[in-house]
Image 1: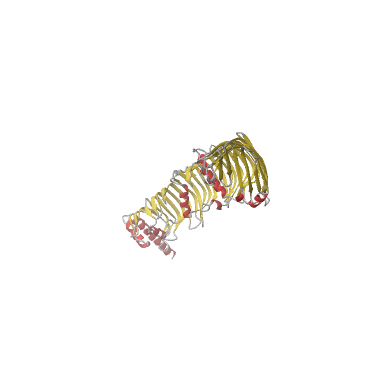
Image 2 (image 1 turned 90 degrees about the horizontal axis):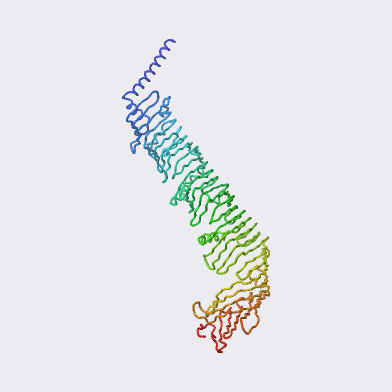
Length: 639
């Protein structure tokens, strides 16, 4: 019995061996192609045909000219099949590996999904061209371990992917020399490493997928060059619309030239961490940016060798270091910015020249500052600053301006002023219109809304201005006081009347001591007190249009002009003279429309009587006894 069993076992083994030998013999014969086509017809849901089949023992099958499908057939020039050592299960073929070479394959084709019927250990492409709905790649080498298709519309199967391509073209952008090592999953995919060339830049990094999008990790962009016609924000906007990037965990941009929001950045080095591109700058939380560049240009402004370290949190931008050459000088800044407030720890301006070409930028900066509710500077250092204002009359300029200030609050609850701090300033020269001063100084301080002008000294060509005072804004009534001495102040004004304009030139001497309440106009109108003594030297008065014969032209002196204020009622009086100029008037600040201010000038043969507030005057020719002008609104040309 045992002998019979041995013979039976040997016979079975012999039969199996003969079958295997026969299979090997057939597969290595001219009938291999026919056998393969028959097998494909039995086990494939789509029509499949091979031009030539080649079997290499023990388990390698090479197919040449494989066609899959009838409608829009898929053609593969060469496919290597590494058969699994076990037999097919439930009509599912198992392959250790499938290698496709030199294929031109549209992954959106229905025939591509035929591979989902097989159990594949590794799927690979060599030197192939692949494309889908929104991308194409050439020179592709692709390896996917344990590929998984979840549906027929899936372009690439899930699995561990190693991908390289000479070029990937996606949404108008060409990525050259692309390398990707990734774990591709339906959710929570991971890119262990990726690198490619784009616009002359070498880009590399890692990424992790989350439900909200991808997190970019350790991304480096080296030598990126974008022209003005390729603004960075256009690319970022396109990227943001896809929702592809959730956040930037770490990004380094090296030696790059690009344009962003109208700014041209040259040789930029930038590091960024924890940035969310879909959020505005005020919505970032825990972000970090540091950069330096050879230059940044925006319109007509140029910043040379700028550098900065910036931290971003909700509604707060912390500038740890900002240092740049700007406007022929240097700017240094540290502090915090929010949508409606600026608090600078330190601001230093040295050698900066704010000239005519910067006027529009200054206006823009002023308008931006008007939108702030709070502005504070802990330490302000200004050295040798020059400002020229030619945007509107009167023109003015300051040269050699130096400011030393601490603990400044310059805007509070939207109101501009010195609310807190200490400030001293000096200028080598300053001018407004035709008036020039040299070595002017000012010192002031404020504490708890109490402002003190401790010293103001402005030298003039023929005199000076000196003043001190205070303004207490901590009280509702806002009491104030000013003491001032003015000597040799040039006056040059044209006063319009209903007849001819009156031109006045003189040097003013003024001594004043005034006080009052400035809580509102009503308080001021009922509280103004003090006295002013004044004189006009080297005066010249002329009546008439410029370039036309004058009705009156005389020199004058006005001495001992006394102005007194008592609870808002102002009296103006000069000594009575037979010859010369006199002034008199009364102004009640509670009824300013009823004010009167009269001027009389008596010369040898002419008398001028002028009601300044009514804008009318009369001229008399005292030598001939005739009235040169009697009508209040009559334009007199005959004297």
